[in-house]
Length: 397
Image 1 (tube, one colour):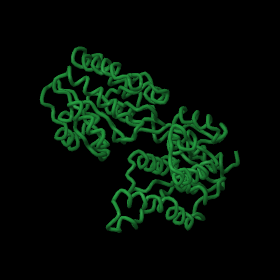
Image 2 (spheres, rainbow, N blue to C red):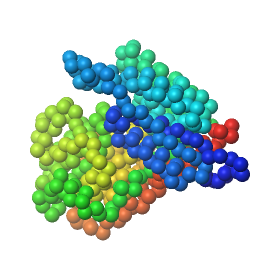
Image 3 (cartoon, rainbow, N blue to C red):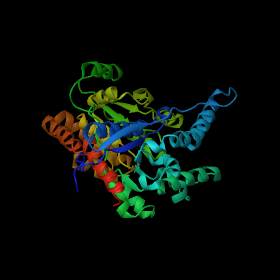
Image 4 (spheres, rainbow, N blue to C red):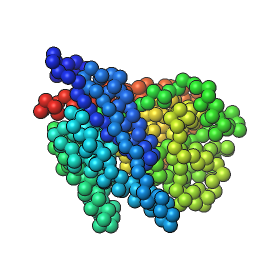
C-alpha cells in the first residue's frame, strides 16, 4: 500500500469535502476535530488530497419570533437547519468533490443525499442513537425517535466508518451497525496549543481567573459538557469530600453547570469554592490546564475523552473513571477510580495531593509520564491514516 502523499503517475489529488458541525451549535470537541482534520490533511497530505472544509451558517427563523421561549426557538432552528437547510446546501456542491468525510456521526442525515460509496463518517460514540439501540435505557417521544432513525439510516449508508477508539468500534460491532471490514480505529490527536510551554499572556489570564491564595493551594479541574453521563454529581461530591480535609482547595469547572448541579454545590456547601466557567478559547484552556493541579474526569461513559490527553500534554496529571475507553486513552499515565465511588475518588485525589507536597520528584515523574504519553496522539498521524481510508474507498477495497 502506498504511503499518504504518494501518487501514481497520472493520478490527481482526491478532492475531499470535510463536513463540519454548525459553528453556532458551539460543540468545542466537534469543532476541534473538524478543524484539525482539515488543517492536517491540507498541511501533511496535500500531494494526495485537496481538502475543503464545508460548514454553512445556521439560519435563524424561530429565534426572531418574539413570543417563543429562546430555548424552544433555538432547538427549532437547529432541527430545520440540520434536516433541511444543510442537506440542500450540500447538494448544490456535491459535484465538486470525489469524497465526503462527515466528522460528526450525529449529522448522519447528511449522508442520505450523498453517493454512499464515496462517504466516510467519524463516529465518536453511539449516544445519539441510544433511544433506538437501547430504548429501555433512554425513553424518548415518537417524534424524537423518528428524527433519530433518519440520522441513523444516513449514518449506516457510509462506505466506511472511522471510530475514535477501540471501545467505540466494539460498540458499533455489538449493535451490528457495520461489519468489521468497514471500520478503522484512528484516535484523535492533541492540539499543538496544549503544551507545558509557558505563554505569558494567556498564563496571566489564567492566573487572574484562578488566583492562588497560598503557595500550595491546589486547583482541581473538570472540562466538558453537562450531559448526565459526565456524572458531575460525582465530581461535586468528590470535591466536597476533599474540601473538608484540604484547606483552601478550589474547583474550576470549564463547560459550566446546570441549575440542578449548581443547587447540589450549594447543598454540599462548596459553591463558594467552585469557579464556574463556560467553554474557553483553546489558548486560555491550555493555560488553565497548566495552572491546575489535577484533572478529574468522572464520566460513566465516553467515546474518547479528549480532556485526558489535553491535560497530560500541559503537564496536568489525570484521575479518570475506570472505563475501558479511558484506560485506552489515558494508559498507565493516568490514575483510575470506579465510576461513582466517591470514597475511592476521595482517597485517590488526597493521595495525589499529598504526593505533590511531600514527594516532588515522584510528582514531576508523574507529570512527565503524562506529557510523554500524550505525545502518542497526533493529528498529523490521524490525517495520514485517514488518507489511507480515502484511497482504499476510491480504489474499491
